[in-house]
Length: 565
Image: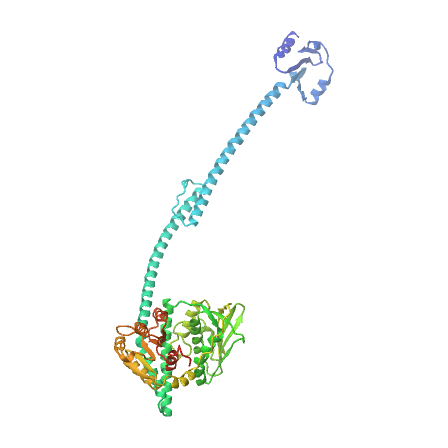
């Protein structure tokens, strides 16, 4: 008993011990940390609990642990033990364990977060670098170097592929730039060669223009002189054919020179207000006889009040002349209609014909130079195929694109839209017809003295003969110097001079003659040189300039600027 008491007493030093009890198998307490329980027989509750739990009982409460067990000897129960412990120390240990685990978990979270942040930062930084590099490449910068491309992760492999692509692009760009530079140099060389060739062609045509027009001018004058003689019916026919040939050659020469000037960019539009009736009054008389000879009708339509256009009159007339001429050439029956109508803030100018029409496959080619439909034999009576090419160039220069609608076997219509001019304009007086001028000329020029200065002998004689047949007295000179030295030059009624003369030119001659005279002289210049600068120079000096070949009726009309016929 004393030993059990000492044993239980030794348990008093156990932390959180509340109670320790040792009983025999009859429930008598032989040892206890609570001396008041010694030698007492406790109730059998513990025995029942022990039996229920197969010899061991343990119960947890809010603040204690109640544990009991049987004591065996030779498989015989000889007693029981019961211990009640407080949970303060255990709870503190549990709390400490939890705290340590929480700290470890927090440290793990922090370390993991730092690792993830480092990884994400590294990925983001490299992806941002790739994106920036892509933007620089898009801007044309290919000398790019990316860092951190030595790794084995996906971003590193992507960066390595990106750098290889950049290097390949740089090589391709270098090769492309080299090829472009070489091609550009070739194009520049070709362009310069083409410009030189074009300028050479323009200079060549301008240089020979005078010489080309001289024989045409002479032939035309001689042919007109024949009209005043007694001709047989056959001779009249031959004279008519000569005139047609001269007109055809003159038209082709004008077209060659016009296309040359257009290609060289030497024509500049001079915009002005233009009465629509002025255009038709110019065009209709020019083509009336040609239409009658072909048995065709040439009609025009214009609003009663007229339309005021804003364009370059000369260029607009060039478009209409080529369109009407082309329509007459390809129309066998019916006729041609020229109409001008107002459409909003523009004027719609159309040239209709009842000709052969144009196949759809040719519509995109008709404005090409030297392209002709239905002229495989290259009949020059139908021109060189430059008329519509000139129309295209001039319309582009004026900013009035040309369009065409056509039906094979029905005819065609060409049209342009021309800007309107809003300021009021007084109608121009109606010009005199060629017949009126020639009728009056017989009386008006009879006995008049005219001085002709022409270095081409054939052209000079043709002009002299034509003027003399109208009753004029002609003094002929081959140089300006000879004319100035002659007394026949003083006080003449008219002066007709070629522009380009050996030595002093015609412009200088007329200036000197005007300086010597006390009254304004009536004079004009004839030239085969169609250079705009040269013609503008003569106009600026106040002289009338006629381009060879010149019909006699036009020459006589030009000699009367001061006196009304």
